[in-house]
Image (cartoon, rainbow, N blue to C red; front, side, top):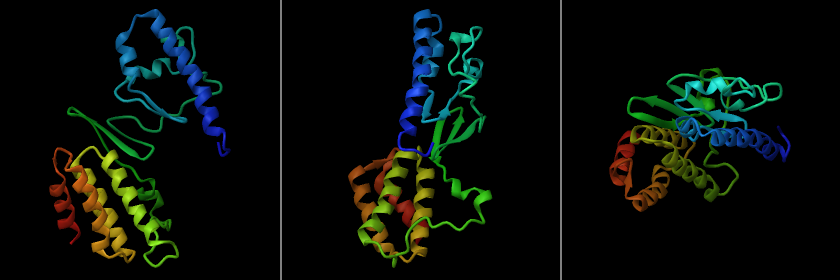
Length: 208
């Protein structure tokens, strides 16, 4: 990793084995349930998310005795399990499983206890030497990203309140901070099964 072509090479390399594995399963035509569960497996470069599929470990590696002949060559592609259970972090998502289904929240590695003593600049100060458009653009990116990544109102409201409080500390006027989110919420009309105005009102009550 670290070179311009690394991401493409990783995708081509891993996809070759994944494609062969799926083809073997399709030709055998014996386990449609497994194929359905595999459709829920997601990979981003070399990170895998395997939801609700504990048997995946049985055919992670190429082996004549494993189901479907296996998936990846262990000698050059050994997987490390970073998280296992009813909740895990995948890229910038915190994924949780419950009897009601899956839910997603934003995961920020910088908020973890091991990074508590590390000084990080998450947002530019209002008087920093970049354009105001660029500064406010960052808040819009975070707002729209949270809209798409958070699966429920509670998670979204928490992320928005945290962002607005952080920007207020950086010197941004509250009126300016709320102007663009209001416009975006008016376009959406509904968020998380309720009125966008109601969501905005909840955020407003917590930051005032």
